[in-house]
Image (tube, rainbow, N blue to C red; front, side, top):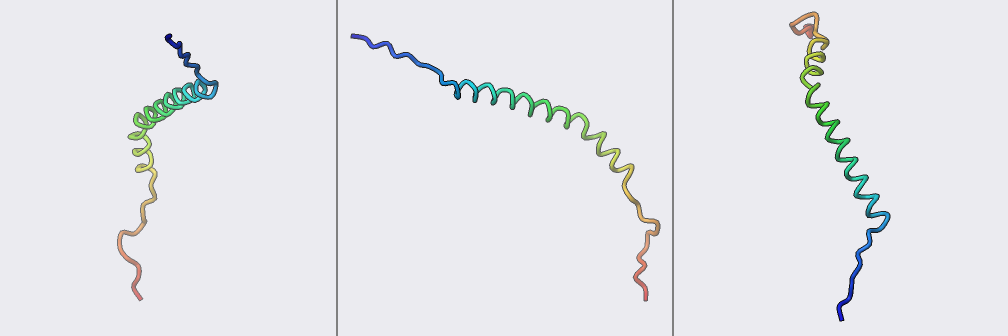
Length: 61
């Protein structure tokens, strides 16, 4: 006699698989945006950095 074994997916298993796929998609989108805009962000930060007025030390007594 052959037993037919039925495999049922639980609700939480399906939910976990769906959430995992959506999170992977969102993380991929965020990583793509960051990698595309990082050079521009770096350039803007370097352009707006505070620069000292005097280039020499003022620790003389």
